Amino acid sequence: MMDWLQTVFVVMIVADFALLASSRIAGCINILALQGVMLSVLPLLNHASVSNIFFASLIFSIKALVFPFLLRRALKMVNAKREVEPLVGYSASILIGLAALIFSFWLSGRMGSFSPGMAILGVSASVFTMFTGLFVIVSRVKAITQVVGYVVFENGIYLLGSSLMLEQNMLVELGVILDLLVFVLLSGIVVFHINREFDHIDTDSMDGDGPGREVPLR
Amino acid sequence: MADTNTIAVDVFPLLCGLVLAPFIIGVVNRTKAFFAGRNGQPLLQLYFDIFKLLRKGAVFSRSTTWVFRLAPAVSLASTVSALAIFSLSPEGAALSFPGDIVLAVYMLALARFATVLSALDTGSSFEGMGASREVMLAPFAEAAFFILILAAAVASRSMSAATMFAAAIPLPVRILMFVSLFIVLLVENCRVPADDPNTHLELTMIHEVMVLDNSGPDLGMIFYAASLKLWLFASLAVCCIMPAGLTGGIIGEMALRVAGIICVCILVGVVESVMARFRFDKVRRMLVFASVLSSLALLIAVGVSA
Image (tube, rainbow over all chains, first blue to last red; front, side):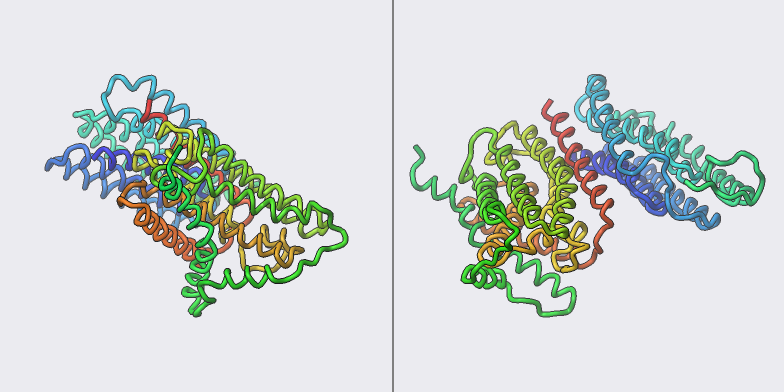
């Protein structure tokens, strides 16, 4: 059981790195779906009761099916170019991620004592996932990738809760998921309108020149 | 002093490697032929090639010096000594002392250095280009490989290759090490996502282009050294996921290991058949990713043993 739990954490970390390295928006969305699957396995590994099975299937359907579906639909609707267009290069992103990973291992080593046993890997995986989400939000220009970053950030928070094995985690998490669902739905609409207004979804060049403005060459 | 029996057990994997290495190149080629719908060359083709080349005379360009003549021997010798450290038996290795991993990594680097130097020695612009590409990828591949070795050392608390992979390493670390090692294997052995061993267009080659001027026994040595290198990485990859000591005797152990190596070679053939070559900067990104996987293995090993 411990081995499987560890494997889930490791897959989460590797998925974060894949997100930093991937150059296609569709690839980012697939990684998001993978993370959703991993997170839905987590409650079952902790304790396989009826409520946990219900909870796991809820997480699975929302994070592994609904979110990717909505994001893919938004991607198709706005006809965006399929490249991620990072502000920070891919290799540099990976190296920054590595630094963040080392930092989160150091951090969770410092705070490891307040939860017994498994804490170090789980806590560092979740801190690192949160960091990756934030980094993706600030370093990728497109609105869709920023939504992806936001969801990854939330994945990190959820992972932190369940790696510390908090009992009330589920209740809080259900509320957050509801929020998130509304957010992703709304952001799909917002992205669509941004696209209609500016002919692109590059959040860096929205200085109100009106519709039809050319995207500056980088 | 160790008695003869233990020595025989320790040397046996090395002998297996020295004898069987050309065979696994045949396995890779047959797998690729299968995917292409061909029968492919005989499994033992590389043995025939090497014996044919050894019987031939060598031709040396007038612009080359002793560096060019020395390089194939240096590269073969250093690959064999690295293999002696990394061919693991249940109790040890043919050559083993604390810190031997560092020597082994440097031996592989020496082999590369000799090849690059001889490529530059020919004065051919193509070979110079190949050398430049080789040394451009080398630091990234070495970083990934060395961090991986370090992870195994930390997880098993030993500084010798012989005991490093035998110890109980947690499963996620093993898988991470395997994946990272497999990427390094593809790059170090000039396999498809990084380089195409079949192409004879100089503009696209890395390793092949560096040995264009070699002929006769020299080329035979280079082929043999290349197959030994593939054997070395494949057997390390097998050791990563298959801990030693599953069966009792050394014969059974080696049979399992060889079966594993053949599986890895089939995997290499499959990867080569279903993937296209990467753009050059993407190869580097792949290696950076491999280093990250190794670092993750290292961090987990540190976290678990702390």
